[in-house]
Length: 232
Ligand SMILES: *Cc1c(COP(=O)(O)O)cnc(C)c1O
Image (tube, protein in one colour):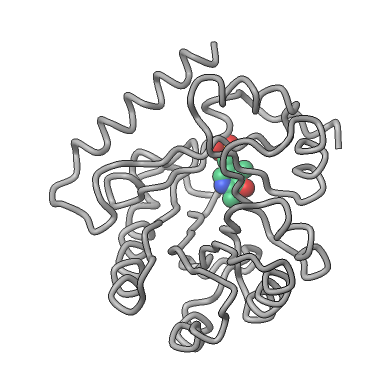
């Protein structure tokens, strides 16, 4: 089942790449992050056995428990909102924090990473659609910080993360947001070195995201089925 789902995803990724009308600055390969939140730790072992080494979790505590069970294999991505009081643990547990959404968080991550002699990879999450409930830098906040990022010596900014509104009827409606996100990526890449990731696309819309330049997609449901939230 999992193998079938993974093969389906791989085909869909290849198909989306072939639909691009022009070469993208994000390159022509896509990294798949398997989103294992709200699933048993075992699914991490299963998907890694199939060669998918990038794991996405949205809560620090859950990732901690899973790493206590399984150890830390592959590359762990934090994709959920991070509270400043969890930063210390997040820096210990995650190879890349995709959901950095405030200058306060940048400062806190920088401080903890420096203490650990680590350079923490991160993505800047931008709330392009301007949704009120959604975290992310607003476009205005982003404009303010984007030229002062060199101050954070223990952080390496690798790119941009975007979540399309979950309320859309049709994935096609997310296309303008993905197009805009790609513009943000290109601009940031022009400003800084080490910019290589544009993380966008979830189970419902990753094919559109890839057509528009995503090179990192975060997939849960389409790989593992529906999440069971009753266990929380
Ligand atoms: C849960 C989650 C995903 C995966 O969503 P699916 O629709 O199950 O693929 C991707 N990105 C973020 C930020 C998430 O919280």
